[in-house]
Length: 250
Ligand SMILES: Nc1ncnc2c1ncn2[C@@H]1O[C@H](COP(=O)(O)OP(=O)(O)O)[C@@H](O)[C@H]1O
Ligand SMILES: [Mg+2]
Image (cartoon, rainbow, N blue to C red; front, side, top):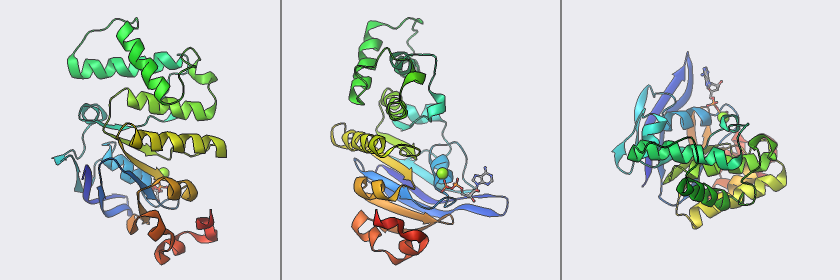
């Protein structure tokens, strides 16, 4: 078990956004948290990644309690969330974006002072990260000139620059064309299969989650209503009820 939450709860005013959620994520798996809008997925994600503190409950990574840790501290032990598109530096090239992340990571771990210029070793590593997400030939492209699907891939390259063991992604497939979704899905599979990473995905795109995931946890109204491999989730009567309009057909 690489990641565990124990009875996490968080309410906003009178609304119980996350209620008694216990999650167990196996190393080197793709574990998705699925649920309709308002189910509490993003709140759970924010509780795990330290953006908000739980009212009660704990989060453990590799047997160590990490509840409420800051993103920097989490990155040091290998827990990284993909950046939202908005945190890409639009006026910088893809290479410069990844180089920034590498430098911040090195400073964090090795207290190396680096100049503003990209050193050869940072450049090499940045190119490797870009290559790994399929952006190997786009090092000089300005981030804001990248197509949407490639911007999402750049988010992931920035995450890889931090040398994670576990990557958490909030709706990595949201707002993308079918082809782009497939590209990101293939990339997520590659992160597991070639790099041995653990990936936690919070998503409401049912079809892709069914294809990608080893284990799916389904939430509704802040609670876990089902958990298991895709085949069993597909047949689960609580899940079918939670998803009206037959979206499990896809
Ligand atoms: N900062 C907040 N303040 C008040 N209510 C919130 C806040 N964040 C989320 N909520 C509420 O908590 C519930 C769960 O939201 P969220 O975790 O964003 O769900 P999901 O990501 O599954 O769509 C929703 O009813 C939402 O309106
Ligand atoms: Mg959400």
